Amino acid sequence: MAVIALIDDDSDIVDAISLVLTSKNYNVVTASNADDGYKLVKEKSPDLIILDVMMNEQDDGFFLAQKLRRENVSAPILMLTSVSKSTGMDYRPGEILPVDEFVEKPITPLKLLENVERLLTLKAKE
Image 1 (cartoon, one colour):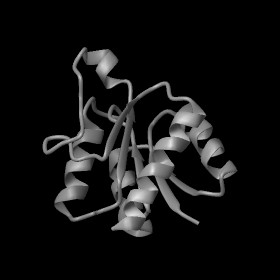
Image 2 (tube, rainbow, N blue to C red):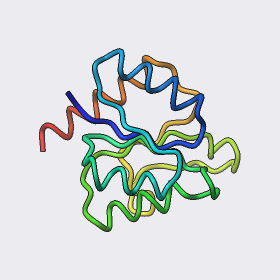
Image 3 (cartoon, rainbow, N blue to C red):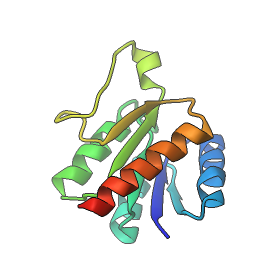
Image 4 (cartoon, rainbow, N blue to C red):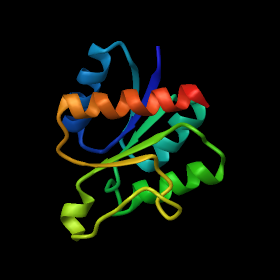
């Protein structure tokens, strides 16, 4: 059973995503801010990280993703956020944003599961 770390400060989002993922037998561990999320990832070594951008600060998720990659955390990161709508900028995975996928909120359960399953499959092939 894959372990998925969900790091988001919106308890409604956490509850909804956790419900969808646990219904598919994923083990979901959660944190509500970047500091606790960092500790969670280091302690649990999840197979996948779902990460919000805007938590305590507007860019917490960006900095956490960069920190995890600098420390060679190889779990795929699915950045799930509404920051593009807030800033008007278009974000894409890459060197500056070291994530595997960037998806705008809101996301349907089907789209969430498609992304999760694809990223976990890619990780399994490594």
